[in-house]
Length: 202
Length: 122
Image (tube, rainbow over all chains, first blue to last red; front, side, top):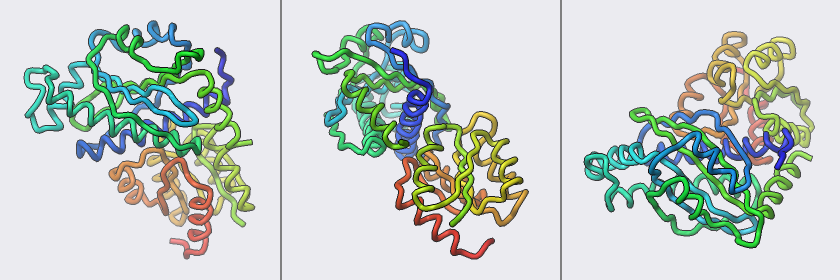
């Protein structure tokens, strides 16, 4: 799928706003300043995402899924490298969970809340930009591989499935974390997003 | 109405802001990099600068500092996706007149500019 440059620019700006709003929420949660790199954006058929994602992450991932619905619907996922996710949970609880770098049940609860706050902030920015109401599901936290992630993405089954993958690294003042945001949508939602962004400037 | 310089590396953001500003009968000029912003400010002396913080060549805070060196009375509205409190504080300490989070609402931007233009220069 070829995205015209102006449309790519608009989608990147959409993600940029979403990621920064998510970072602001994470900053409130952690009491740390968050530095976000400029995001890279790809729009890919679902089956091509494995190769692309494999270039930036490997091994077990800590993921938080948040299904969203409304005029635009899909599955938003926060991806964290396993060891960094454990460090984050440990940092946020003053060293009470994820002892020895293991993501235990308590750490899962912490990370699910992180995902909830971050993804809700990001999806709220999408709603504001697209001027639509977006509803969110309860977040689900998983430890999974890239293959597991691809299997668990929930997009309307009757649609051609595309994935918008925004990759960025974000750094807390005390910890560098590789964080990635994946938004999987059906082709209907993708068309609506592109059209709405175009309408804002025409 | 005012002459406004919109500084943002995103062409999309520049177009959105241009559309809003022109609906308020303002004259709009654009810059996509920090360096271009400084050049255009020097040549155009706009009434207000809308400044993004994330740009490839230099940060918006750096641009803000250089603009203030060039003209201590410059009116800068920082419009950024980075809405962390620490960022807002740095922007304020850097001498910006206002801070608005993206996406900015039409009314908020036009009202902010209108109020700013009525204030005495620094």
